[in-house]
Length: 232
Image (tube, rainbow, N blue to C red):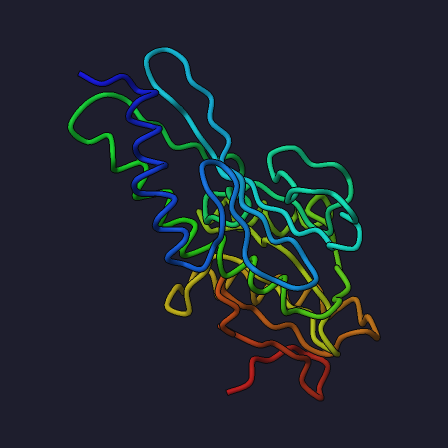
């Protein structure tokens, strides 16, 4: 029977890496990037062997190539340098939030972890990296620590947390792994929108809720009577 290290190497070489190249990434082994003229959009695989198995996770970063001037290789998303425009573990993009690790161990189902990690890259990491390559400069409205109150209410309702809050034109955009068909998400986020709008921040006049692919789910704005309404 092959060891976990041998299975992990096979999984990355013969399944994970070809799948990423099929999605448009360039690279090999534990470092991949999306082609772009001005920025390095990098995906790094970090593995930790031990106890007869291999656990691995994925880290992401975006770095201006001008900031990486005259360096011979792409940045390493597993080893941030402070030059990054953005850096995050893939777990921050997934509905569960926090750290996410896949585990390869000997047995007939060892490839499932690799296939699941490819699906996470396809569904969450790739759209976010692409968004950060094409999006213009946006102002972050609140950091994760300042969103703790809203994220606590979402967690209590067993819902995904807000991944980021950004100002785009005169709209506050809340991004997260929600669905239009989830009434609990709608109810909690509508309450959050009322709270944000009650501040009467001149920089935004509406709150828009988007999923992880950038699709608008709901938009909330104050009505003329001073209450808050959702447009039809």
